[in-house]
Length: 231
Image (tube, rainbow, N blue to C red; front, side, top):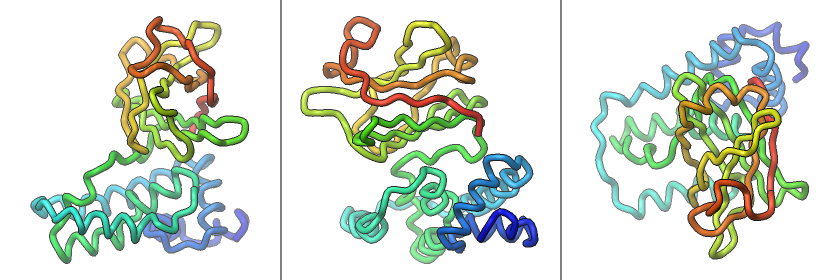
């Protein structure tokens, strides 16, 4: 489906189908292209995502046996290909149709609180990638809360080393945002002094000793760089 085709459909219905994961790959890609330039469409998507993610608010959490979580993870991700974070969020966080049905059926909403979800309508996005894409990290910054959601799609730290993320605003020296955790998805709180510097800045990841740079500046190789852009 082309961008020219999509305006002929009701955008509210289209946003719902996207949130529920019902669009084909081509339709989803076309919809995502529109999301980047149409605030009204992003608002419709945010409404759908919020409505679906609150469906299970009144269900008490229960701790399931560990084997259930392993089986669900295997079913969801065993054959997963690496796709943009926005689409993966729809399938995992925003597109909760199948997940919500499972939760409503077996009352195991605690299963889906194991990893943070990206903010729905945050203004800034960056992809940090090595030239050979051996390391790829998606980052989305929620200016309202000062939280930086990161998702590592490829690569990781070598044994005995850590990956550290840096904010570079204009000609200023790099400022550390912290060591990336081993988890694929994480949220990094951004200090108040750096929150207004994200627009137009650059994010970078360097290879550092365990615990991060001992000097307050990058000491190892810069492995991935990405420009912060408006979403």
